[in-house]
Image 1 (cartoon, helix red, strand yellow):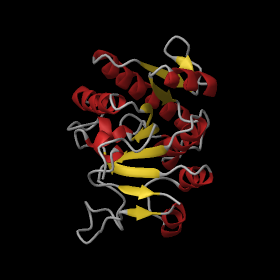
Image 2 (cartoon, rainbow, N blue to C red):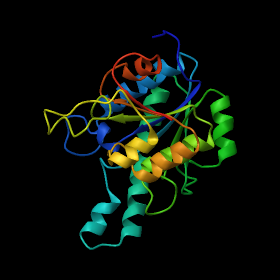
Image 3 (tube, helix red, strand yellow):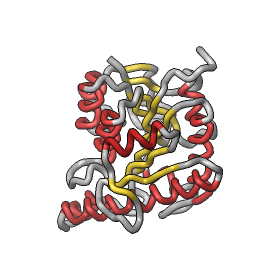
Image 4 (cartoon, one colour):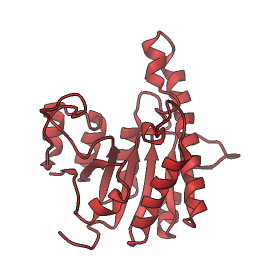
Length: 239
């Protein structure tokens, strides 16, 4: 254990569902404010932070396809949902004095800047929190894949997956009381066992770029800084 952070630059992947809070839909501002405070705590440690947020609290493209709709259009709608969540997080960060910028894979200049790797690196080097919206900009790719891609592009030391539970389990611990948590796994083991922490493409991309995946509960206040110091409960995926 150490009180010093283990990483220099991180990418946090948060699910859209994490923003719902006690509501049944949408964005609970108090939850977004708490996540922003956790990010601010990490920035105070001198760690560069980038973020990818899903859009499942607002819309899921696969839901359209499952009902016979057009998957491409559905995924585009889901990308817009990620932009809404990204703007909400930026607002919460700015409110507490943390400089933040949203870079979108889909051009929407009246709302936010368009993504480029050079621009993202420049903002991170300036000490700003960079929030990536719009997924990869392509249908059929999840925000997990977008997170792995952006982590590789910015040279992140670790990809952090904030989930509903404190790590990767043998089964869903909320449904199976016998489920046990892994302390560590390899990328290959995650794919071979079919563990559903991230989609296969995301895990494979992280493996190919030697990026560890750290899985923790995003609902624990202060949990992000804690796991980055090697404390608390989490699962680390690394080769």
